[in-house]
Image (cartoon, rainbow, N blue to C red):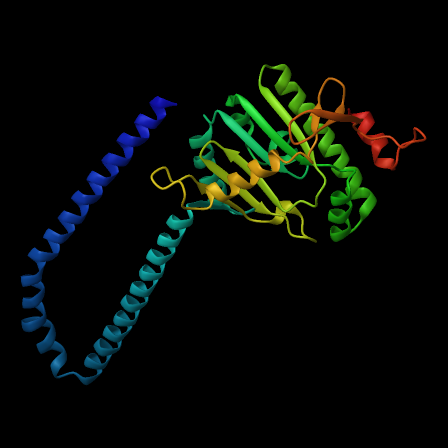
Length: 311
């Protein structure tokens, strides 16, 4: 990791040096070409168009079009500089959109930078795309990490019901949530068996943010009611080391920490398949089986049977 950081530092230094050399050479070239250009305008171009009205009109139109183009370029550059300044203030470093090749290319470069993150914190709906599927390409980041803190939506809670009701077909979506959550639990259990420190908690509220914290970067998606999470853009904010109180990285990371320390969210026990509820002091209060069972010993919904089969 230190070797890669040193290499990137050398690369950025060389890039700045060559960019300054290029700008200097361009300025020198323009300065030396000005006398030749002035001589061409005064003694060649102007005598040629002075007596030709049509040629003069063509040159005037071309010059006006050039001025409009340069003015638009100036406005775009000014807007781009303003956008860059705002992005720097909020520490926005990347926007990931599904189906964009440029977004995927930038995404891979960013994943290479965060591959050595020691700790990974995730607050997700089911966690399937992060830990199980290959769509997110986070496997290398997760495999290289030491500690995983994961929060998933309880697929049997009231929040899950509100979520699926906003999306459409209730029963199929609940079953999908159950199966994806079960697959994520299986993946986390295998990571814990491989020696990683894995802690899993569940929340019952409707999902609001999908967060992935990889070292000094946080990946953010907003869970809109009535819209699939996969279709939403993902924003990546970085920690500003020189000004850690600025930017949105700290705000989202603190939001995760607040949710993580909330005593309402039970911890999952991988050995007993139970949810452990604790009080504000961290003392255990009760344990409930997961997936849950009704008082009659029957599954409260058909999806529990599917979850049992997966677990």
